[in-house]
Length: 307
Ligand SMILES: NC(=O)c1ccc[n+]([C@@H]2O[C@H](COP(=O)([O-])OP(=O)(O)OC[C@H]3O[C@@H](n4cnc5c(N)ncnc54)[C@H](OP(=O)(O)O)[C@@H]3O)[C@@H](O)[C@H]2O)c1
Image (cartoon, helix red, strand yellow):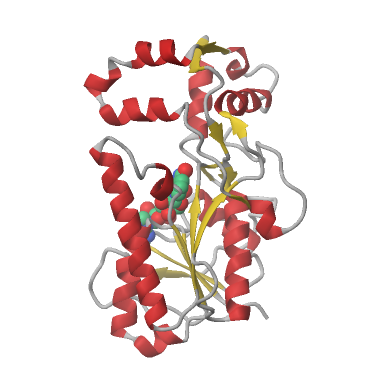
């Protein structure tokens, strides 16, 4: 009998995907909003899981979290202090948890040397939250894995990503999209793959218990590593025949020319300019999902995508 799960961040695409994958097992959704109605048909169908109202930012009495596993796709900087408060308030109940899986971000690695303050602050918040989670769980000898996924995309039930889907919208609007050559490498992970890894590791934690020799932090990506331009071409190929996204021409410019053309952005928004700079950076080399899940690698893009 698999351990029961309390899921935070159920209203994210990965949360929705986990609910579908965990169909038939004991699962409670904890959050600010009740779970969305399950998608009709397919693996997302069925009854909505029970709901426990819990705002992670609320420093009041706190929710009565059931025993078992905690899985979180909520912002780690909200989840970590909440977990610390939970452990302090009810150490006996906390000590009965079979494991904690929390989602951080690969930005903690890839934006470490960012020149703009916004990204540096993000890295600091992620790192502080990761350290706090590790301290809390180690102090009570509770097993923990922190997933640090790169670019999450895809659709699960009624929810979809807001990054690659926006790029696809851009392809639909523009006749031509200039790029810095082929761009740097990317390793996007589908929300269903991330959910499957979280579920798999959660069950491993429940079986293996606390083992301080195991690495806590797991940078994670999809099974395909491809250039920025190849990622866009595959997105175009994955659209219907008549889709306008197919018609957008990807124009590979010499990277220096591309950056000179983008340079006015530096005055308007250093954060956006750095995002443009990152198009040429390799944000890949993370553990591919299939290494953890077993089975064959899934080529990009894994379906479904946001329509
Ligand atoms: N998107 C990416 O490409 C990306 C990349 C790397 C890492 N990540 C990380 O992966 C996870 C999922 O990302 P996402 O972009 O798919 O998430 P998202 O759509 O922004 O969803 C965030 C989830 O956290 C919940 N949440 C936020 N604040 C909360 C609070 N105070 N109390 C309770 N629940 C709260 C939200 O619930 P409500 O319904 O109440 O708002 C929602 O379910 C996050 O931890 C994110 O940091 C994302």
